[in-house]
Structure formats: C-alpha cells, structure tokens
Amino acid sequence: MRTVRDAAFDALRRHGMTTVFANPGSTEVSLLTDFPEDLEFVLALHEGSVVGAATGWAIARDEPALVLLHTTAGLGNAVGALATARENRAPLVVVVGQQDRRHLAQRPFLAGRLEGLAGDYPVRVESPPRAQDVPGALG
Image (cartoon, rainbow, N blue to C red; front, side, top):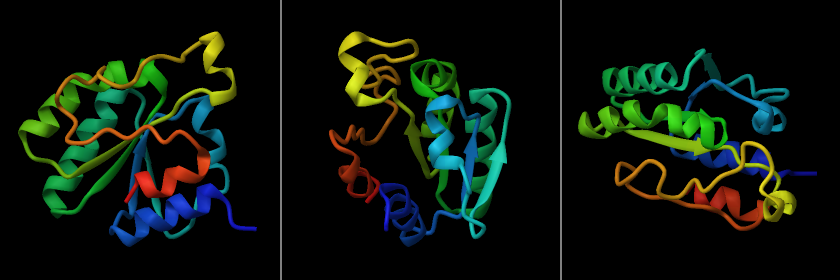
C-alpha cells in the first residue's frame, strides 16, 4: 500500500530533490526509517549547520536542497541561517516536523506555532491539515 511518505518522496523526486539535509528528532523518525536508497541524507548536529550546508550545496549545484528541521525548536535555531539563505537566493525547501495533530490541542512538548516563526524569510508556507495533503504541499 502506498503511503503519504512514499507520495512525499515522489513529489520531491519530481522536483529534482536528491539530497536531504537534517538534524532529525523524534517527529521525523517515521519519515527517515528505511530512507530511500536513491536519495542522499546529510546529517548535521545543529540546525544552523543543516541550513548552512544545504545553502552551500544548493548554490554550488544550482539545484534545490531539502532541509528537514525538528519542530519549533529546530526552526527557531535555524532562523538566522534561513535569513542568510534567503538573501543569497539559495533554492531551499524547508520541511519542519510537528507533533501528531491529534495531540496539538493539548500543546504537547515541542509543539508550537510554526507559521511566522521564521519571519518573512520563507517565500511560501504550507501547513497541510491532513496527512494526505502533504504531497500536494510539496508541489
């Protein structure tokens, strides 16, 4: 059976995304388990380094890079590097993990309001309301 995860990776491939830069956390485990062999995974130990490495890679290759950040804490740590990436016109797609939507009303640990946290640096922000909307949000 085809999963949302499979459809999301297919959407990334259609857009030429071959490399994922991340400092993953618990909300990204299901996405990264059995990571596809045709995609490259680059691990960095701080979100600023994740975005910095992705920015350099994307500019040098003139290709989009995928940045995977861990919830509100990860996005908050990456804001300075995202500002630099935007100023340098780096073609980045940034995906930020969020807690299970079924629990958001109780404001679980690491959940937060992601929209607006990166200021006006994102070109576009999508928050798909349902799992099946994720591939469409990626393009």
